[in-house]
Length: 232
Length: 218
Image (cartoon, rainbow over all chains, first blue to last red; front, side, top):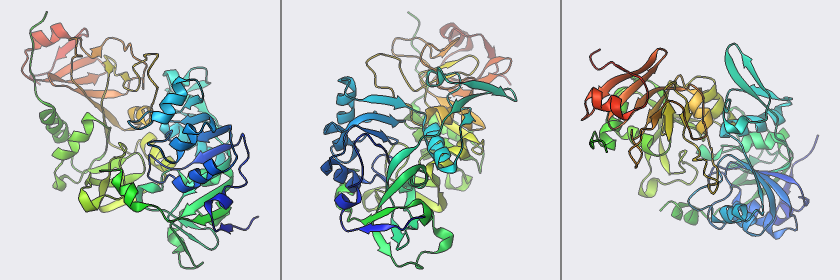
């Protein structure tokens, strides 16, 4: 039972994140990445963080900047390497951070399992590959499976499109990606939105993340021009 | 040194893969070479493209004012949506794949073995930063997994091999291999050559260290 807190600034929204925390960060590349919340995390004192995210940052903003500032101890992700992942690459090669590489569907399902109260699950993904080494396996109806465990976090930083005053969320297009499952998997979920709307103005049929999963909301003005510019 | 065979170019190959995708299929195209297949799917075919980051009914690449930072494909390229598109979160997207709901997945590869093992995510070189993304889920999830690749490496050795030497992506998951020199069907009783491009069967058999069955006359 909790009431959603609305904040005026991103700094205020991330103020409670402690050093050493495991923090989930939504997004697939830049789509759905809560860049402004991560930038606020850099302003805060939290360090020695474990980050759970699909990627390990690109360019010089958001997750990449958090890594550049030496605030990340470990990254759990599926795809750290990309053309502009220089801050991750440098920190990884220098041995300054640990990497746990997880196949993308297993990453998503492990996060989902944490939010859904599942103890562990058998998945065919990765069976017989180096990423299943040391893990329990089982053959079920002739097919090989790997035992995977839930991935929990103290905090999830999520970008959504709209929130009502209760914290019900809707997303935009493929920016939804990890938002709904991370919101459910973390003890505390902090959400940045483009817009806060009155309660009752979201069609209940279209609410993607019900407010029970949301703790803190802050409205941000995304720099849409520079986001678009990054695709040029 | 063996003779050099020219075969077909990448666009022609993409057209051949596209022609083999039945109308109305749900298809995932991997990043890189397989993305080209989308250029040869006709709108009338009713093929719906799935992108692993959470969308069915993906349209072509977004140009100019169409670019929307919230709408990207698996390669993080800005794309468009077609009428009838739908969005879903990442766990649903991979459940759709893993659950066998997609008909065909087309992937690139470093190597494919004679029994259909796939290696396409890591060279295994110690200085390489490993990145797997959705490769392992895609390889084993769809009803059929097609591979598109050049048959030979730069040094002229075949990428269709008895056993993969690169780290594996999935076991016995590939059903067809489309290459610039031939199309191979991985069947329970062996590797069948379906098509040849600018090379004779005997020359192909000499290039590939895997027992082949000549299916070109089928």
